[in-house]
Figure 1 (tube, rainbow, N blue to C red):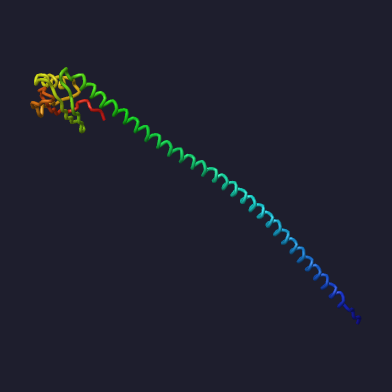
Figure 2 (figure 1 turned 180 degrees about the vertical axis):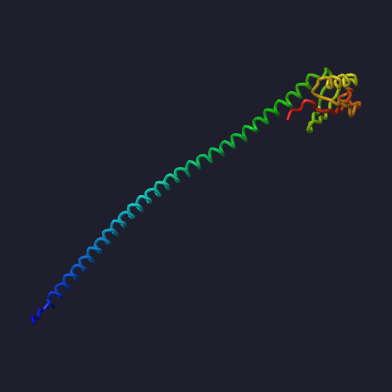
Length: 182
């Protein structure tokens, strides 16, 4: 019987399979590292893109905040101007009211009658003065009532007075303002 020694072939086959397995392992490791490097590069580019977007958004936010601050300042200035205009309108309305009342009052004052005191509280007016006769006081009261600006004209006091030897009638009137505008 012939004996063949197959041991070296088995050993060489074992070496060959080992070499193949090592090569496959190295190729697999290189592939895994290559895929990891590509994934790492992709993620880094995504991170840098997102950081750029964040910085652009922060810059836009800062400009918007300054614009909002400017708008708030404009709103404050607008409110101040509106308050000032309201005050001016109230002053204009107030200016025409008393001026027109005093003009109507001065038109009703007859000769030889003078006014010494004028006091206005809301729509009530008290008036003091002097006249040469009681008839002048009556004429004055009638013309006040007829003027349309005043109503409820009442004589509060009428008395004899003297100043530097001249006798006259001192009087106090009370009446209401009819055309008072707010």
